[in-house]
Length: 499
Image (cartoon, rainbow, N blue to C red):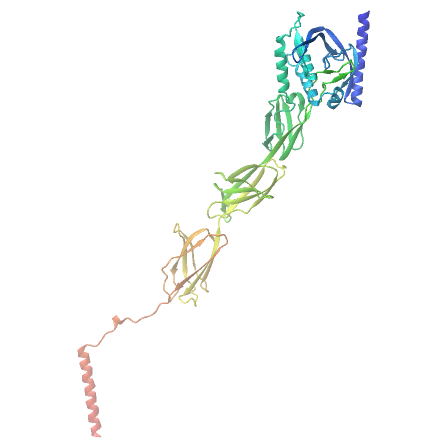
């Protein structure tokens, strides 16, 4: 009957505790109520020594449990008697624990971790782990004494067989990480890609949950954080801490303070993320007149931050004319520094990246440099224009004929859209009355829209008599002329005397 009555009381107390727990949590998330009791199935002897190892006292201890879920609880004050089956108030808030216990916040946090990594953690399931955990807690609460478990020979001789238990718990506590290993680190990822980040501290899957928004999606797969980039973004990813349904508690009300093991309270985990947007530029060269354009290999571009004028990178187009780079959100200026000889460099291109596009593209088209030739044909004095002069223009490198035409009435020819390069002019037919100019006249087109002026001069043809064709009189002819002249004079004289 006594057992039945005790069981009824226990069930009632358990129901009361559960109801009280949830009702209190709804009002104040920092306190709850429970009942603590001694589990006499687990007992052991403890020897307490002063610092100089002088034997002070021996006591027999029992495991303490809370009635709500039978989980173990640890005493914090070894010098005080525990009141069995006592109603207690459980404190969750760390600051309140410090106030009530008089311990420092560092001591409180270490006690939580000793309780967490002690009995019940992993394979720590034998009673010896509970005994070792309890003594480590006392050693941290009242460090002026040495606490030792003794074997049941009642000689109160400390047993060294628990040293490995102490060492393992202390090592776990010392290496405890409350946040994933990647917290506060910076990671880069391209828009549309997925990045997997491993947590070497192995706390990710147990204590954290992924988040998703318009910029990225983060999910947790074991101890890997998987980040999928949705659009360009520079900022932080703040992982959600899982709801802690088993927080460590500090109990008061059993004539001393006790603490239960619980999952550590985790800090919010933040990591820096830079989601870049891939940029792809396509560089071609050609002639607008023909509409034929080809990929340009070796074109050089510089990308600048358009606000700070900081040089970000230099890119050179590949054999397909492609340049590629991944850029953060921002405004950039793309400036061409080198290109195919004879072709214009493209104007600066301003690129705005705001993360709205999976990839940003640009098309860079270079046209061949073309210029204008204004040709004038004059006489040597440059006072008279010479129309109808036939000239021919040849490519100086290939000797290919590229143009042939006669000068107009003003002795001029205007030739547009002459492509980049070196040329020479020759006179094919000179105008009537002028000599043909045998000299080659060279010119060059180097700048787009450049006007090159060229003047060629011709000399007039001068008519000089041909002395080689004049016939002089012979001696006989001269003698005949003299004879005739003498006869004429004689006849004239006679005629005059008759008168």
